[in-house]
Image (cartoon, rainbow, N blue to C red; front, side):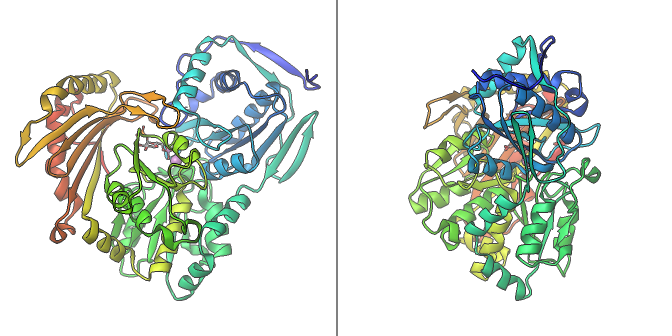
Length: 548
Ligand code: VG1
Ligand code: CO
């Protein structure tokens, strides 16, 4: 038994009933997280569930959003009171999500806390979030997050140590009684790993040859990472980085790297003097958007093209045993995997479902349609990694992004892809709509629409091939005989109301038809999707709230 010299108090309080984590951690409005005892109770529920060994090591860091610094101090106090004796925290409280995953793995921590609501807006009226990762560096599984939720509902209070605020500004070690706190440079380990995976010398030469890149950090956490790697190590001019400063409210931006929220970058890509590669990442640095001059690379295409050229890059010379994509993600990856003769796994939405496959060595590359891609180098998706991957690929192949895409499509056909989102303030209507659609599935199978027939209509049920765990109701999918597919599911990252996501895809093999505008190709399928699910009737929306 360890006798603690820390001053620990037990605070009694009534449990909160709304602490069920979603697709990636617990996300709530800042005002919800700032309620007295709210964060404390959730963190206590995590410790009660994980039952970490006494003296364990913990990693903490966040995307720098509003409330990040205060929340870190609270988590340190709860952690200390629950037997943690070593804490590694990013300087100024910063760690991008992929860097946190790396630090947890590299320093063999027992767990990690990542403070982020990812691409959701920040600031006092914005969102805050917390996710916790396991020693593998991956997010806790659905089974564990459900167990934490159950614990949170029965909690009678929490344990907290009285500690002076920890100085997060200076790197180095501090001792608080038997608690050891190490403030680390959040970029160093990550920058080192990137140099092992990619050919920095080839990229430097490519840049010296006059090629240019533009990276939009969207005032999220990647600013300091991009500065160190792109500017200091690769020699890009400092003005290659837009919105480079990490700000608590993301400068009022919506830090979501998609063509709508990163419109400024898209506008740059359309100018005659566009950079050769333009990219953006989100608030916590795990998403990526890739653009070329006048060209948008769809995330599902990106991961498929990465697989097709994987062995050109130093860290991936030996290829991969398999790949995976989330179910709604385009099946472009499957086509490349089939040609290479490797398996392509289909998982539910959310990065945590890839982690078992990565850990077991079954896959070495994976992606989601929501601008997320990564490999086995960490257990989270990784925005800057994807950007470096593409820069390295352009340097290695001496082709433009559009040329690489065209060649790929001519060979494999093109998977036109779009997501239509419908927001409703009334969650029960969205649930009723999905319920009705689920009941209609048996009757939909075999039905003819124009020249195509619905070949299968089901509610995606996942069985994890590694641990056999089951996840039901992961999205409704309609697969058509002509290469089209519609998927419906509800978002699990919002903090108010419900967002219905409708994913549209059409595989076109005819080389003469690979250069059409995506919206034109997919509009009829989107309208059919809305009619089949009676979206207007249930949600009262004539048109999607957003199309990405
Ligand atoms: C969304 C995306 C999903 C992604 C998740 C977390 O979830 O669709 O693919 O894994 O966000 O990404 P949902 O449940 O809202 O569809 V991040 O960058 O917020 O950590
Ligand atoms: Co994110």
